[in-house]
Length: 264
Image (cartoon, rainbow, N blue to C red):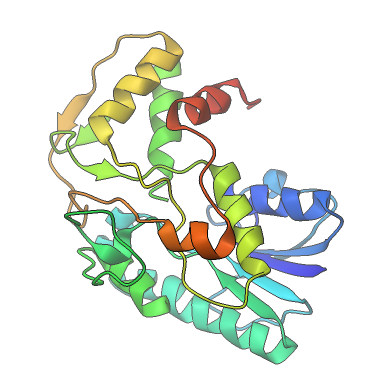
């Protein structure tokens, strides 16, 4: 298969590219390297340095659109920039896929489109984003970085900060599970699917788990809550299990252990 991956120099994107290359696909990466890293791109893939805010072509059978402005804080400070990347960029990916007759797999967000929830959000739940990022992603239709930030700073003996009182929750899903879900979605005839574990973990509990894995005791400082942060975010993944055969397989503790053990 010929695959094009926008954002393929980023964390999730580079893992997806590795999986596509491993199964023998021809892969083109489209990334402006503003947050991605050239060194992350599999040498067997072709890197096309390009900003998705500008239209592009896709000579591919499937387009995986992962390029995004994914920081909630930036979305609140620079909503027009956030919209350009997350809305205009997505339209450009759709147009590229349409012109090529390719299937498009769009990776949205880890729950920001639903806002704060009272129960695990299903794909048909109300979309009530509380941040410009969530709004842009809703218009285009992880909370990922906190784990790496905690681990890097704790391992280096540097201070960590939790914004708010630590009770906000997220559904943390391992990158290997995300990649597996993306590959399954590429073989499915359309649909919207939540990709998560269905388990919510508070940021305070996440920090404590990182401390235990690293065998350090370094309580975090508490900073003021950040604008746009939903107080509770967890996903109902019933539809993904039923239609894609996807169930998250990597437990949070195991994922943190593997992240610590991974080469730098």
